[in-house]
Image (cartoon, rainbow over all chains, first blue to last red; front, side):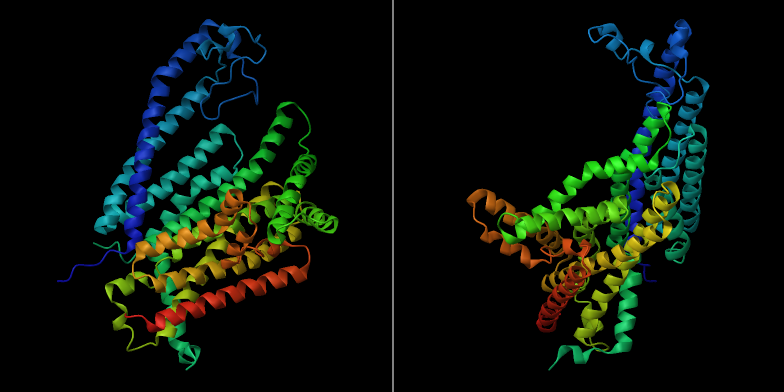
Length: 183
Length: 316
């Protein structure tokens, strides 16, 4: 029996999946470090210095980190005030922990689904390729929506860029490559 | 014998459609699609993010969210830059300093792009127009070259003439790029109309449709040049390298030669591509726009005829 030839597009999708999988794996590690190391230190310092826990709406906030920039009003020569020590960050508390946790779960889940679907694309399998690929698209869109809901940030063009690959995956595996992912 | 007379309309349509769907399924096609979306939306992010940041700063300082004021500030800041860009283009074309009339024309042009039309859209579409050849090269480099290399075209030759195969594939690729541009520009226009309601919907839609036609006109010669290179080189990799090299070297070479030797004759090199009048597609005068479109189509016809001549004589 002649071997079924894999379309070049499926190979390209598999390669992109592997690249994104590596990026998500690194992101999950970074989020884990932030969750286990930086966050408890910041919470501890916030408890010691209650004045630092005041949350100002719209303050100079690092997006997604739950931490804010050092006090802007500090004197220029004050090295202690300018150091990036956690004492000098304002903290959001439970919201940022939820964001970090959600980001970690999102990264791990996406990395696993991308890896499985990459193998599925290469072997042209229905379950590992089409179904897991579709699951990745749905999960990525759901997490995107939930993260935006929690962070209360408006959907910008940068957000649209993050949606490109999940949407394209959903379209491709369910239309263009639907009849190729059948093994 | 006229090669165009050999084109069979039914097979031409079949081959065009086959190329269009084949590109959607191919690796280069998917990469081109993803990169075009990334570049288009990335450019839009670069242009629109400062505005979002200024609005956020207003909100933080408890000032009213004055979108029109923010846009006015941005337009004021960017008008001299656009005027300089347009004037620089004129200067480069003429090879001499601008006359007062040309400077006035440049100022009017900048005013038209930034104040008469939706400024963010003008900026995004102009940047997209100049990055388009590189994106097209990624998708269109392998129209016939890998088939020539693998000698697969001999199975097609008994059913279709060479001219039908060559032109059918070129037109299929043009359709793919037209669809891709439509998707990218529709996303940007919908975003601008829904999130930043500074301009009337009719103005946004009208300018997007007009820019779409202009970008398609700019894309056609680039696809045709890729067809020519693809027919000339019997290797997909060499074709990709050559396409990108041409699109990089031709705009940069005159600048480098001018800086190195101080001569101005090197601007002739830019006429290898429709670069000298590509910017005219965004001109306020409809005569300039019509001339630029005719020029782009003439370049495309020239590339396709040369490619057809090469493809008709090479060993397949």
